[in-house]
Amino acid sequence: MSMSEGIQNRPYWWDGSGLPDAGLSLDPQTLPETVETLIIGAGYSGLSAALTLARAGRDVTVIDGDMIGYGCSSRNGGQIGPSFHKLGVAGLTAAFGQAKATAILRESMESLTYLKTLISDEGIDCDIQPESGRFKGISRARHYEETARSNESLAKAVGFAFEMVPKAQQSAHIGSDFYHGGAVYPEDGQLQPAKFVKGLAQKAIAAGAHLYAPARATGVTRDGDRFAVGIGDRTVSAGQVLVATNGYSGPELPFFHRRIMPLRSAIIATEQLAPDLIRSAFPDGKCIVDSSRLVLYYRPSPDGTRVVFGGRSFDNADRPDHYVPDLRRLMLRIFPQLAEARITHGWSGTVAYTFDYAPHLGSHDGVHYVMGYCGSGVGRATYFGHKAALKMLGEKGGETALDGLEFPTRAFYNGKPWFLPAVLRWQSFMDRFGV
Image 1 (cartoon, rainbow, N blue to C red):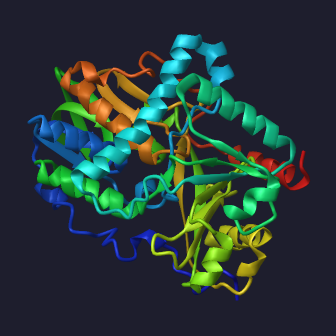
Image 2 (image 1 turned 180 degrees about the horizontal axis):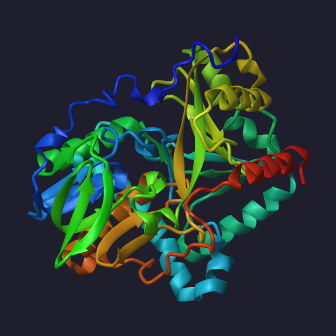
């Protein structure tokens, strides 16, 4: 019997959230032939944009190829933070100059503030712990000083809050001696991602947006000053179009398909555990990430009864028979006290990486787009979805530090990252042997 047998191949977050079928969508057969504004993709970005546009008086239609929030918006780990560009301060400064680099970093800080404020102001019930904090475990001893220098640069540039924690003191934040110390980010937090996307959809609907699913876009073409959008076997005429498909950008939209690398991330959840056992792993309830190349991320469930543990998958397809035992093995390396904990859920989704490790928003041939959050999308997707909507409204508030960045692709890349499984296995080898 394989370890994945008897495990629910669906997000633990869906339990109690009403997803994936929460009565949020209208029958696609009732979709009008002509709409004012059409958004393709009903995740954080698309729904955030829909809320902003509808509140501004626009007639907004949102479609999704699956159910509302079916993608990574209801599948991620639910950790929230500013999500800085992977180049860091020095890399960004070398690429863009100090002023542009600082503006990009400040925008990352603003995305977290916007997310927290939106949830608070709208009263979205998503089990948010806005400043429960995050602990970053240092996987290799040499990473400690590198992390300290990086954090100090961010603190100097944009006032980023952090505290370095030597190995002798890490037991206050994690019940494991696996790491070589770490860093605490006190302004980071966590939420229940499926409840957040459901709440965001409900707010957009209440503002007047119309959501249709499942309704998959099969192409977008110019039609005079409007756009012809294929949806199933029908064509809908739209005045404006926003593509917000992120890690689920398919070949039907080739410009975006060639610029997004869909990388699969997987998560497991344990059965309900005794409170003392949960506290033995998470003494102060912080969510945790580490400095390994494959980036492990984990946390207690919002009710404090389960461990939710995630990391990169080596497969391009959803293969719980592969990632469930892999993730359980990694979990037990860190928390051997969980050896008797049964795994009840295992699921995956695709996150959207770009070739320059930056999110992108703008327009191509008149079609607006927002996508590419590189594995850190809860805050950024929500914030940049709002900004994309402001751009569509022609408002000055839509300006961002990312405006004008080329949205790069690579020669011969066709949207299928055939090379990623080999790259990830090599990174896993280097993580394991400290290379």
